[in-house]
Image: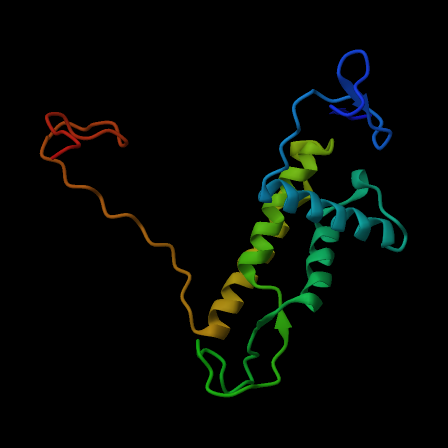
Amino acid sequence: MDIIPSPASPSSDGFTVSPNSAAPSSCSPTPSPSRYEAQKRRDWNTFSQYLKNHQPPLSLSRCSAAHVLEFLRYLDQFGKTKIHTPACPFFGHPNPPAPCPCPLRQAWGSLDALIGRLRAAFEENGGKREANPFGARAVRLYLREIRELQAKARGISYRKQRKKPQQTTSPTPSHPHSPPPGTSSAA
């Protein structure tokens, strides 16, 4: 039960008890979860429901990388990103000039973020880190394949860019996160 301050009808301690919940909480109102935490909870509930609806139903302990991949493919039907097929005349064009019949899919970035949230939620819900199916090699390879496929379809390169090394005035090596000796940050 939540304890809620009620100036209109105080009990002996100045608070009334709400029958809406089962466990007492602190007197200060609990902050709402961050957008990330709320999304992670929604994603976890969606995945849990997917496991329950699976034929036969799956428990979390029996979930494997293959089930995660099956879930990602299932989610593709709800995607909103047009992914051109190699046979499409607009394949490789980032801004096609006309509509085409190519399918709508989940964007790679959305899938990558989803897997990151589910990977964290798995461990928060009692899963062991070493048995986390969301961190499996097969899932990482699938995401990489999706990224490359979508990049080719849109004509966009996803090559990693390396940072240019900073030029230092000192011949002695310094810590990578500290400025070279004898320099100030206000210069």
